[in-house]
Length: 466
Ligand code: AMP
Ligand code: ZN
Image 1: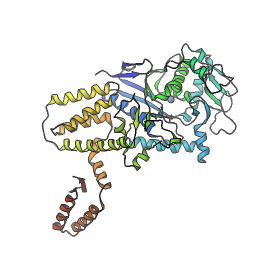
Image 2: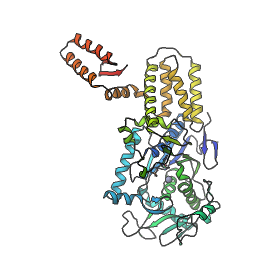
Image 3: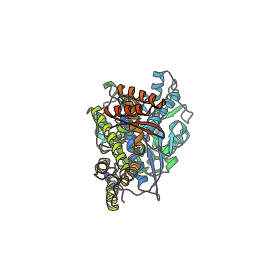
Image 4: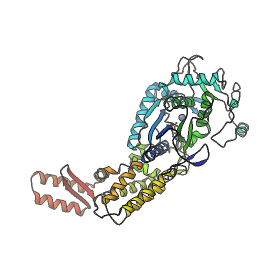
């Protein structure tokens, strides 16, 4: 079945065919590891996960790179301010390498909780300094860059076209720019490829221009080319990357080898909070752990993300997230009912659902429509393990770990057990230890009256809400 993806470069939904046989080569801009990633960042990585899973569902093999930015991302994307890593290191009284290690680790743990598949290659910027230096030297040699007292800058006027991804009108923006333009720059939108390090900068390397460090954009150009070649299939990131980071990545690749590095550029719209921007000053930058503290599972947040298409803004509220938690519980319960069902379903019905689901995900990852089909199956009056198998097949794309539904339900039941039920359970366990089966059964009935079913299985006791 055809796969269609929206391409920011062409501004249309295009038919997707890999450049090289059955293999899809993808590059995803990864996190800047100077603090905990927030739920907005994870909207982008949940999209990355469904993209991977959809392509695999369609039979493609993947070669996917995600970078870890551990140097060079300044406070503003447009090369203003301090390196985010160095600033965090000073604040936390650690060195930037320790900061990077700590937050990379935290990021990976959250990715796991969200059941996000890891790309085949994870590439740290500081492990690729030589590749980046070589890339900058090629750009210089081809006449697209120049040196100033601050570093090496890309000369955008040398390009046939800039910008190519965004609609922005560079002339207009220059006229309206509020920031003072560095007088050494040839054009206001020239950007840093390599930055000469101030005395107190910790992360710095020998280079033809003295001790210095890379600009933010060069890492993605250099690592993308190293692992995926000069041209690959898909490049992903959030919409904030369109006007600067990705625009500049394209400029760099054109400067070095005359090519736009990826065929498809895919961008995720922003997650908003209570209808506005997420920002530290508003105190609404939530992490996955903070959602968990409020009883919202990471997978419920993933399901919440599926309520909107990735190219539309999504508004986060706790009410919305709680309702996704309830939906997830219902989904799991519905899945178990199907698993235990004995109705026979005609093969055409299964095929019809399969086609509709695949049509939805292949249509530029239309998860809201795909989820509509999942709910139709859950609500179907017939209960059948054929439907359960179908849901498991769909879960290869959804990544909601439906297979383990009984485990999650049990865990939740444990958490929500009222004190009086806990007491009855304890008494029942004592009765069983004393082999007093009559009392044990009476206590089981009492627990049932309180709304819980106790089951004694080979693996031990389980308790479920009625
Ligand atoms: P960063 O760690 O700042 O480099 O961002 C990591 C990823 O998260 C990038 O792809 C950003 O575009 C994306 N991102 C940042 N904020 C949001 C948001 N509010 N909603 C969705 N994606 C975001
Ligand atoms: Zn990038």
